[in-house]
Image (cartoon, rainbow, N blue to C red; front, side, top):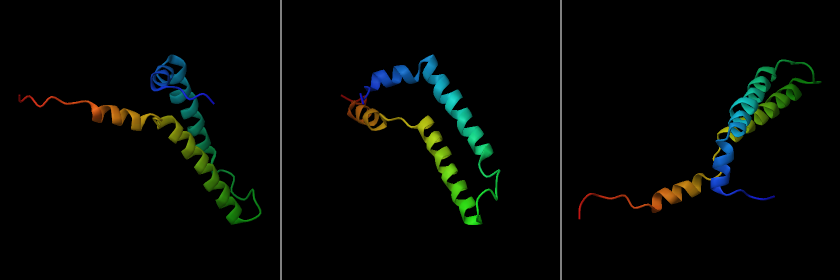
Length: 91
């Protein structure tokens, strides 16, 4: 897998396709999956299997929402900001 550089990621993430993918497509998927989760109780043989399916599906939904909001370059951005010298105004 080719790992993109921060500038490449930012360019793609802020492009029309990137915005549509994260903010429209993935968010719609997460919203619909959340609406559907837990609507079919009793489809398994036991209450515990129903609960396990609900928790598993909630984990998938949480993962999609995490993907929408995560910044894979957060540490790099923090390092860049911390290395910049802030003028104090006193000489």
